[in-house]
Image (cartoon, rainbow, N blue to C red; front, top):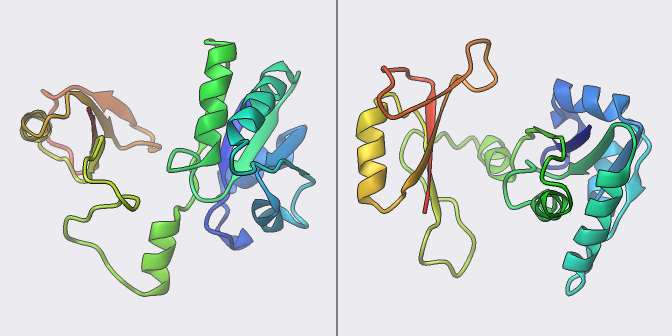
Length: 194
């Protein structure tokens, strides 16, 4: 099995229990650079792979092939969360090009933006936008507390987001991915993509 493991914003104490379990049970752990490696010092042994600017696609292809061909459990551990602006995304896309049926499990990690909010004691109970510099068009939108799925789906479609995923109680015992006609549930997250 190949694991994409989020190791959080930099403090080893912010590793999740699941991340620790996966990292300790993997036969090999790879990190994309020394900064990520420092989080794991004294926790597990790891191999550092540098992703230099201008050659990162070439490195992603090489690492993807190595991961796909590895016989056993291997973890690619990245800072933050593997699904959010991470090096693992590029490696994952290359792995899928090599083998469409590759088995991958993603272990979420604490993202940098929530770490900043925690450090500054900033509480969010209002709409926010998370983006990168120089962007004036957004390809995705995430709606927290999408408790009325039909209304949320209609709103997303009006905004031009036609690929909609609704996750209800994700990672809880009664996790489900539902359609837009689902009943009310406070713990629903909607993801709309163009």
